[in-house]
Amino acid sequence: MVKLQVQRGDLRAVRGDLVFVPLPEGDARAAVRRLDRRLATALARRLGDGAFRGRTDELLVHHGERTTAFLGIGRAPVADDAWRRAGARARQEAERQRARRVAVYLGENGASREVLAAFGEGFLLAGYRFGRYLSNDDGQRRVERLAMVGETVAGTAALRPVVSAVEAVVREVFRARDLVNEPASVKTPRFLAEQATALAVEIPGLEVEVWDAERIARENLAGLLAVARGSREEPRFIILRYAGAAAGPHVALVGKAITFDSGGLSLKPAKSMETMKYDMAGGAAVIGGVAAAARLGLPVRVTGYVPATENLPGGSAQKPGDVIRYRNGKTVEVLNTDAEGRLILADALALAGLEKPDVMIDVATLTGACRVALGSLFAAVMGNDQRLVDTLLAAGRAAGEPLWQLPLVVEYREDLKSPIADLKNVGGDSAGAIIAGLFLEEFVGGTRWAHLDIAGPAFTEKDLPHAPRGATGFGVRLLVRCLQRLAEEHAGH
Image (cartoon, rainbow, N blue to C red; front, side, top):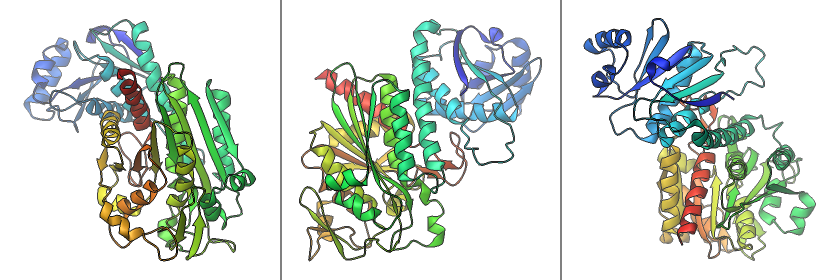
C-alpha cells in the first residue's frame, strides 16, 4: 500500500515527481495568485481561455521544472466526499503519469484532519487492483508515496493517528474487495472461514469462531442447512468478536455470505449468474468492519455473524414448497429458492438476538428490486428504530457510501402470509426490497435493528473513481463510521 505522509510547508517546499494543487470553482483566480510566479503565469493563461474553472471533473497538468496538476474541487464549502473524490482522481492521474513520489498542496487553511483523511482515503482506494489471475500485468502501480502538505498542518506526530486510521480501514476495504472478487470455485464457505480465522492471528483483540456443518445442525440453524443442501460444499457459520477496552454499546453485525448463487432449483438465467460470486459481499463487509474496529481499537463491543454457503440445484437441494422450522419456532414456506439470502440471515438474526445486543445491523446483497429502485450508487436502509436509521444515514454520508431509507410498510406484511406456515419467503411482484426487510424483521425480536440492502453498490460493472470494475468493498467504511457514532452516542448518555 502507498505510504501516506503529512508535512508542513508552502507550495515552494513541496517535492515530488507530481504535485497536485486543488483549486475551487469560482475562486480559482484568487487561488492562483497565491502560487509562485511561474505557475501563476502559466495557469492564468489557461484560466483566461476557460480551459480550467475548478469544477469537480476538471484536471489541468502543467509540465515545467516539475509536473504540477491542478485539481478542480468544486464550489466552497468543499465537502469531505469531494476531497475523497479529488484524492481518487489524483491517484488515477499519478498512475497515468507513472509518478512514484506524489504530493498534494492543501493550501494555507485546507489541511484539516477531515481533509487529510478524505483525500488520503480516496487516493488509497483508487489504487486497488485485483490482478491475481492476470498473466501480463501492465505494471502501472508505481506510486510509492503521497505527501500531504499544508501551511497550517499540525505536528506530524499529532496527525499520524489520522493517517494510521485511514490506512487501517482501507486495508480492510481491500480485504473485502479481494474476497468478493475471488472466483467462487476458490471462495468456498470453507475458504471464507479460513480467511476469517487467519485474521484472529493477525489482529490483536479479534476472536474468530467457526461452526462446521455438524455444529450448525446442533444449533438448529435450519435456514442455512436448507440452502446448503444442494451443494457438495459444506456450509460454515463464522462468528467474529471484538471488545474494546472502554465500555461501549454491544453491536451485532450480520452479513449474508452466499459464496455462489445459482438460484437453486429456481434457477437464474445464465447471464444473471455471471457476477453471482459477489453474493457474499455483505459477509465480506461484516468481516472487514469487525476487523477494522479491532485495528482502530474502537470503544465498542462488536459481534459479527456470517452464515456462508453456496446455493446450487443439486439432487438434495431444497424444493419450492418445502417448509423450514427455525430455532425461534417460526416456520417458513419456501416458494422461491432464489430468495435464499433471507433464509440464512433469519438464522443469524435469531441467534444474535439471544445475546441481547444494544443494536443489530444486517448487511446483504439481498434483492434485485433494490438495485432497480436505487441503481448502483445507493444502498437501501430500513429498520425498526428511526434513531438507528438516522445514525446509519449520517455514517453513509460521512463515508461516501450513501444510503436511502425505504419504509417498512406494515400493510405489505400481508404478502408474506402462507396457508401452511407462519411465513412464505417471497411476496408478490412489487415492493420486493421492502418485503424482504419485513421478512427479516420477524427474526429480530425487540432489538433495535436496521437492514442494509447493498445489492446495487457492492459490485460495479464499470470503473468508478475509487474502485475499478468488480467489488467495491461497500459497507466497510460505513460500518466503521456507524460504530464510531454509536460509541459517541453511548458515551453521551
